[in-house]
Figure (cartoon, one colour):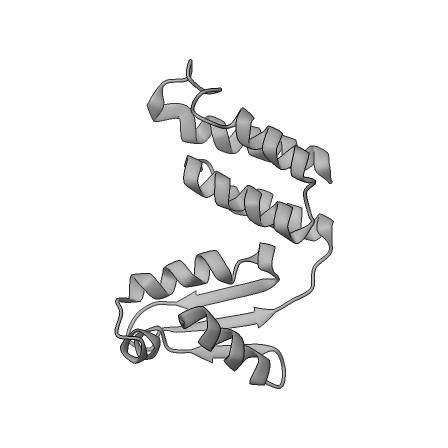
Length: 145
């Protein structure tokens, strides 16, 4: 419901930019702000063609901008956003979004998911897996550019 509301509001916005208060959305949909954050990260990601800016605090806001980016720009954004570590559910979501957007071929996405899975990283100590997973994803995605 939250995503549909934001999509409709964004389509109604003249310039393709929507600015909303996180607290207003949470109140409107009778939910906690973390649910708003979840919707933002899963439905309004760069892989889906959006840039989300957020400012927390009393006058905090969320600004959603619809953008069209080419494959190379999208992949570079994902590489830069991976950071030093990524957990398996996040890696799965990122790869799924890249495949759905057409930025990554399905077979490459499946192979990369297998390569960063816990079975493939079984010899890596658990506390290091997320860092190794991020490094592997970055290197393979760089090769896709």
